Length: 380
Ligand SMILES: Cc1cc2nc3c(=O)[nH]c(=O)nc-3n(C[C@H](O)[C@H](O)[C@H](O)COP(=O)(O)OP(=O)(O)OC[C@H]3O[C@@H](n4cnc5c(N)ncnc54)[C@H](O)[C@@H]3O)c2cc1C
Image (cartoon, rainbow, N blue to C red; front, side, top):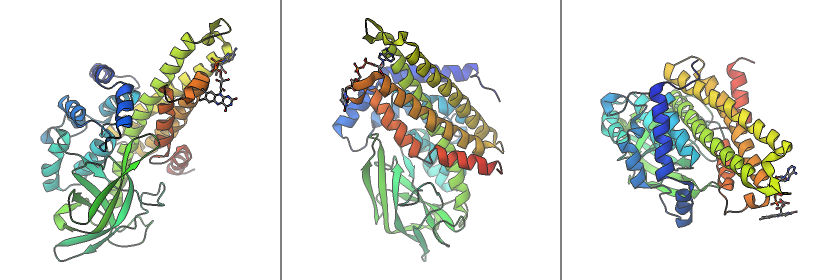
């Protein structure tokens, strides 16, 4: 497993860091939060990012993509995570885009994927339901067969990047009961469909999510992605990619939280000296540094395994999520502790990282869930 970046990857990473530094400082995230803007991100900046080719990185050149992979996409998302940029790379590019790319429906691919790639359309992915926690098959939403297709009824929650999305991919049950792996089919539902409503949810980290209600939404058979009744396979593949990309964002966030903390250690004076001169605090910083380095290796391993279609890719994705959940929380908690009282206040950015660490930890499974999945996949 190659654990360093090649020359092209170094260039992608540096370009992304420079762009995000210039166009998306944390102050922009703060402004977006304070304005309460419904969309939760900047459509203009997102289009600019798409213009740089970022939204097409993991997709085929035939649909306008760059034909690269997750080893490259994670570099972009890591840079976004450093400054908490909320543009829809997770829900839109990774989840919606991957579901289309892997769904095998050529008509839907040609109608939607080039637009996801050029940033003109956002397609969200709505797998989670109330009380489903981390069980991706806990789907109660029903798809009843009609003459020309299906009628969808149910409710999805915590749907990332669904506010303002042009379509939502909805897993629904054609057979079986919530929790069964069999009997799930994925449908693409266009926004504006009769019976579809999207209600914004405000998360603790001020990021965008939504409740998606389906009240007898009619779709045709042409809207099916993947194999009828076997949608769980596609959900698994999409979630593995989403978890990998989320860990990259977490890696960026924990790295920035650590940098902010080290800067504070080097400037804040107490008892007439910089507080970073105290060994007790140096030890705490050293521990965070080591955990971030380990997390970085795990994210790289997961991304490269996904690109290679390696048999242990899912296991490595879980390893990365478990490691990043713990490491981001550690980096953010230690940051707030070391900033001490002021770190608690809204004036300082460090608290944003703690909120993002908490929300990201609970998205797609916390570290206990992923340690367990890792063990089960290794037949422990
Ligand atoms: C919004 C807010 C709410 C608060 N609420 C409470 C409350 O409910 N109860 C309460 O008791 N206080 C509260 N405080 C006060 C807060 O606990 C103090 O700010 C705290 O004592 C830290 O002091 P400081 O900010 O001067 O940090 P500093 O003294 O600058 O310390 C910064 C960091 O360095 C560490 N440090 C400093 N010197 C050393 C050293 N020699 N060796 C090792 N580590 C060192 C500190 O432990 C801290 O982690 C609050 C403060 C704020 C701003």
